[in-house]
Length: 535
Ligand code: AMP
Image 1 (cartoon, rainbow, N blue to C red):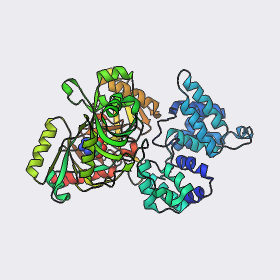
Image 2 (image 1 turned 60 degrees about the horizontal axis):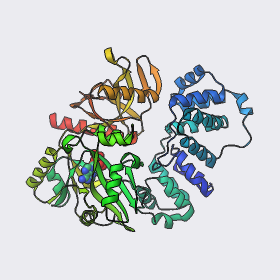
Image 3 (image 1 turned 90 degrees about the vertical axis):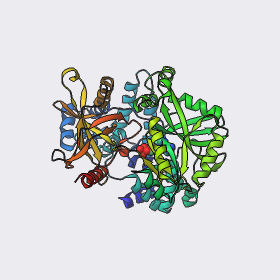
Image 4 (image 1 turned 90 degrees about the horizontal axis):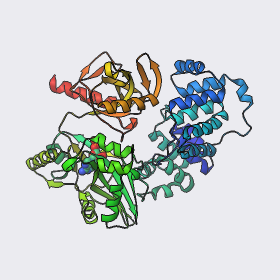
């Protein structure tokens, strides 16, 4: 697969490399882009039917046979030979398809749906059956070729003769292989090596590994370490140049508009012309007590008028790192030096509580203090560690004292009974199989969400519905939820052979996508550990 893609990329014109890498990766826009097509499954199938002049039953039969809207569309497109004769002469090009995606994303306001449909119909009516298949897979975000980002990095490396390590490193700064591919194609390895943190282009965040105790952290970090409170909010990366400030989420999307207080605080307090800061945004209730995560997500989703939301759910920013300062990258600086710089820059914005110690009992006291203040636990940071974008290594360790919840993806749902009979209130929860990319069900629950959340979830899942089977609907795996449970049991009920006992949803993780969900390999690991400790 890598060779096929590499050879293909090598033959393209430079301007085609970016759209090709995007589309092979199954995405219409780069990850950092705030654009989205906003086309539901239902709209898409309507347009497919109109573009080929087919009956709904025909598409449904094709879908039942293939289980994939792209494959189904290819079948119905291919079954209409007359349509083929009407294709206009000029075939679709890569540049043109991306231009059309941009036009669709730009449509807003009244009548948006109809205008989007018209542009989409124009696109599909020019597509061959094979093109239609892949366009549809890209539009619904389900490429399913198994050609993951790591393989694309190798393909770009081979295509343009740049070492894989250089590509990987640059991807962490760009947050996107797409941008690196463009530089590799035009400037080669020299250009790729020059890529570093840049204002207004978010860098992949450094991640922390889970461990069980403060003792383990002290030992792993060579006898002494810096403990920080682990705040229970959402991570943000704040970029500032002069008077302009942008805020990016953990998944690198631009969330600036939803968080005006964060923007204002940074503008007023931070003493730097150009800076990239990292921190955690927490929603505050009465008496400044941290509120549950779902409140915060309402702010990120910008569901309602921002002014009103700011009054109802104020948020506060606490900083924990600095990656760039007035023209210089700080990622190769030691943790201690970055922290010192951060404290100098932060002004009145709080910097996360920290304790440097080699003493386990002192560290345990600090953990207690963090939990009592309503936080999640501690993060331990190795004193001499540099900032490693995108890496989950041993330099940062997180200590959360409870049986850790899993982030799982909703793959199906059932209508409830009684007062919930109109709502999709019973959810099938799945973990991703790292080996195959398949989502495997590990449990089912109707517990944890409020009635209001269930009503909203019903609307979202209806949009994502692929197929209805009686009272059950199968949905595109998109929505990630955090799930608590009492134990993992061996069970023949699901294909993976395990089932969560007493599963309940603890929050909706809109900051995570299905690719960030926990894997079936991790569920197995927890299961094995549990067997070891309980026999
Ligand atoms: P997790 O999302 O469970 O992998 O835990 C890592 C997350 O903890 C980061 O992505 C941050 O959002 C959050 N976090 C909270 N406090 C800190 C801190 N002091 N340093 C780094 N990350 C923190």
